[in-house]
Image 1 (tube, protein in one colour):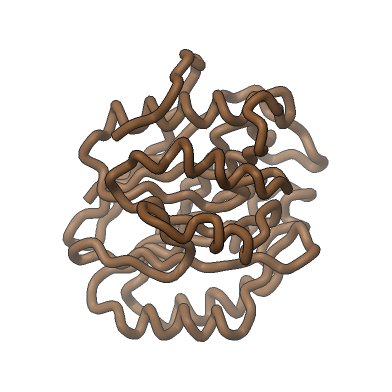
Image 2 (cartoon, protein in one colour; image 1 turned 30 degrees about the vertical axis):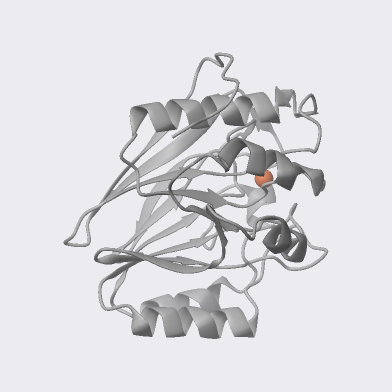
Amino acid sequence: MHILQITDPHLHGRADRQVRGVSTDTSLRSVLGTALAQFPDYEALLVTGDLVQDDSGGYARLRGICSSLRKPVLCIPGNHDDPATMARELCAQPFQVCGARGFGAWRVVMLDSCDPGKVGGRIDAAELARLDEELERCDGHALVCLHHHPVAMNSRWLDGIGLANAAEFWRIIDSHANVRGVSWGHVHQAFDGRRGGVRLFATPSTGAQFAPGSEHFAVDGRPPAFRHYELLPDGHILSRVHWVAALPSVSAATG
Ligand SMILES: [Fe+2]
């Protein structure tokens, strides 16, 4: 079972806008084109937040880029998204916003960690209860996705804008034996760790990256990227970040 993850594309309504020196539209098309060419047999595309840069016109842009995909595009909101607008704009196939989706022995559980008006995240009581129910119902293996990081990234400024109620999140995860991985965006950098038996994954943006381990906000010079997961029937996860060094002119991603 192959899943592709892209995150933090920060799209605008206009194609020529840039964020931190990167043309977000061109960069996303390039990353997606590379990912789909490399892994044509993927089962779903996961998009873990900050789909737009505070511009709801960006959702139409994402529809234009992804509407020809014949696989589910599973989206969760980030702090630069408006969750209600995003759910409205991405209500048709191939998009799914939050909820959960089963793939063979696996269930991908997607959480809304947005705290209105804040850069950092918080999972509200209803969403925590839904997580608990989803995991209770899952008789296979679960991959849990959210925008904000639920563990320290060892970066002072980033660790001030992570998941505020991470202890509550982990209490629920720890009470179920079926969670094999937790995956997030937000931090614009790669991370591959482990907490007990749970694999932890952060994925770089399809645009500009943040410098790992930095005390203050700092942009990194690393290129755009995506992550590939192979979810094995026995619960193991194989995963790697793929950096897309060059930005060839890809007019549209298909697949
Ligand atoms: Fe972001």
